[in-house]
Image (cartoon, rainbow, N blue to C red; front, top):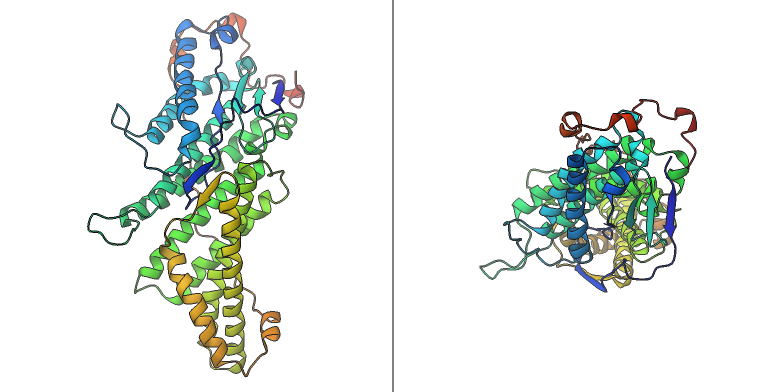
Length: 432
């Protein structure tokens, strides 16, 4: 039901990692790169020549583009235009979208064609240099992961402040801000589809042996990260809006905490200790602590609106907690940037630009005013619990595309392939 082969020794020939990736606003995992596949040898006896050639052409295009551009996609320079007028990210994403409907023909109606081709991908976060599986659902999973990764890279580029022609401070445009939220939700939709509809198609043994790049916990963490960063953008918009109340900002900040906490819960026990993996873990931890600083800050402001000594004391506790978390987040940010591949912070903007100025200032002011209520130790011991809000931001609903019509119109050699909806149902947990 799909043999497995993982190459543990990292020769460095396939896994070309950059020494530095520049400025980072959005964590983008290392690009998994597909290796060539000979569809004619594996499927020539089962499918028409036209379908085999179409599969080969579509996947070869992806292999070439990913191999050439994969090592540089995570670097934060503006992508240059291609000969067709698009960008590398957009062209590769389009190639994957073209490939998916044709690829899904291998798994339609439980066809045993899904086990005929050995698909090989170069990993980034796993110890194994590459993982090969003779299961087309593994290929579908890898494609969706790559599609989401490309969108996260696109969002990162949009959210890096750029110098304006008028010579003012670098900034992120309102259009880029709006577009980035849509991209986060779309990326989350790809990942949610992978988790809910593709992973369950793999036999349990293969699921256990997936590279950590594609582990369910990592996929869930990436999905939650996309949603968490989407809420971060919404909070920044609320901060800039005169109509947004402190209560609205607190709710957004508290929701952001929950997204990042769930992301951390999903990857904390996974073996993310190899290059990109360690950087991934540090990014989630940094953003989780940073979100708590924002949530405690706005919680403290609301508590300070109360008229009792107790509410004022709790406000001081919350603000001091915000200040401590803010200091911790800066240390974690430094650790993230120092972890290979090296990275650096873009100029501050949005939520953290505002809070980096307000948290220290307001905390110092409130502590000074209320210093007669609690000692520092007492304040930290009684830091109030954050309110619990339901999560509002959800992934876009993404469904796998329909199988390309050519699968039904071409002359498939059906005498040599068994098409049964419940193919080998009793042996679904075995690896041949």
